[in-house]
Image (cartoon, rainbow, N blue to C red; front, top):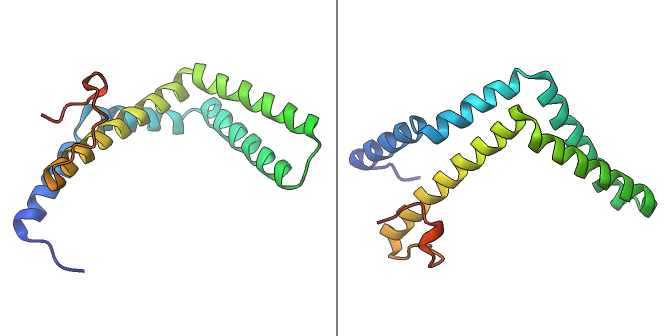
Length: 130
């Protein structure tokens, strides 16, 4: 690969530092740390992943439709529990906030490279590119 110019490299480093210092990144990292230290949150996520695997494997292995339906219902209940438990909710909200910020940054960069804003046309959902 071709080496970056020193000026470009400096810009990317500053951008990375700004992202790392953003409220969105900090909120996500703090929520992730809280989740990693929370046994109930870890158990909820592991249970959810196990149920997802059971559905995938059951579908692949032609599991009985009623059994698959039971697993799906349990999975939906677990999803609700994840969304209602403060630690996991904060993690998912923080992650979404960070991903939204990164999508906005990417759209802004794309705009300056191609002239295309990547915008859907509605300013109501815009993170701000002007």
